[in-house]
Image 1 (cartoon, rainbow, N blue to C red):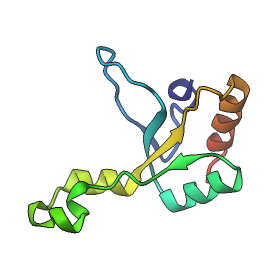
Image 2: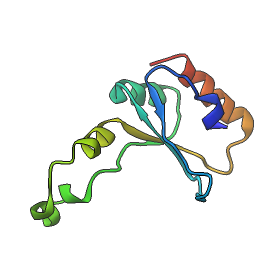
Image 3: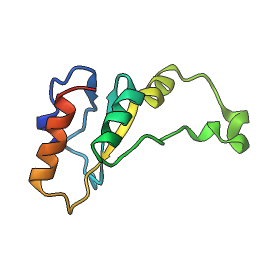
Image 4: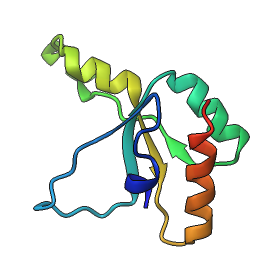
Length: 104
């Protein structure tokens, strides 16, 4: 439902998923412009999200393996995930979509 409802939202880039791959879909991942503003809007509207998918090479124990990964850096700055908890009913998902479509 998020795929369809969040199409063509300014500042939101949906990730491409291959139909040949399966997913547990417990999180809906995408890229967002002005992530801090977006996160504030989600918090204000009591919408669960995660933005903590950081690179393992940022951990001090792995820093010697770190390298400049331009696209990974961009992904890390813009990536955010919405919860797709199975207990969410369609009305709640639709409400989340409508809130996001209003902008941040």
